[in-house]
Length: 384
Image (cartoon, rainbow, N blue to C red):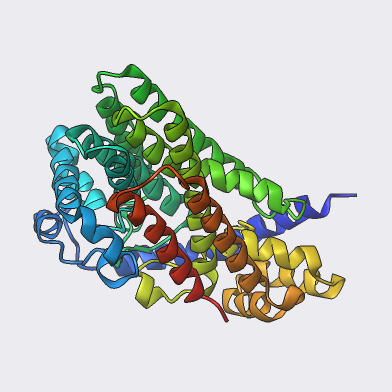
């Protein structure tokens, strides 16, 4: 007998081959009907003027970011400058990838942790640039695997130029970030960043390996999330404290804070994929379900669902009926798996805040607590 998880994967693959490829081709044509050249000078203007406002400007995160706004502006300029380090033939692609100005949460964390443990220095700015470049590289690769068409209110790199170029662009961004990390005098910083990059990629691989796997449980999901998202947040906070030459107990506390807050943020992003609004988020939603990635709301639902609800869930996933699946997660087993996931994410944030008790006593440390409160507010906006 074929295991149910395996048959679900096979059914999903059959559906993908039968239906997804034609849709993807039509989407690619729709996004390139302007016959744009491989890249345009307008992307340089976009990168320098911030035509699409950073998400920080319209979210609860804005009050946290104000404390380090001058430093974030320097980080933003430094990120844009990195394109010049690449061959002129690919420089435009790099400009397009780095210029869309996301939330910059990882640089924000690195700067706040630096200020909480000392004085924000050029080393902290360097760290902020590096962790964001690694994050951007993962987004380029994520969009390929998810066949996402929009991110940050513009076509994804893969939607605009195809998967082959996008894979290589993500690789280039990873390699460049790791090159920058070798310039720290303390070699342990570069080694930690390299290990983190490997952990992020390993987490993504395990998640891909476990697609359409009905045996995936919540504990395994949390391990994957901690690897693919929590680890980079953790490194941003840990190395910021290390650069400040904080003692080992403080460094460990900030590392734990980053792990918890990063894991919680990924849970938020997974809930947003089900309950968010594409016009508001500026990116393609529902990709997790379409690709068989069983995130926390789905796993909580399956854990308490009846046989009928489980069969219904599998059917909706295979047929890519994301809206109906989202409704089932709001109103089905456990009085709403979506709300239970939000509660789990909020608890992780409170745990993160508790990790810093007694280690912070200045405005930057206070802002790290406020960052957690901002995440909780973002979670609450998704409650039904």
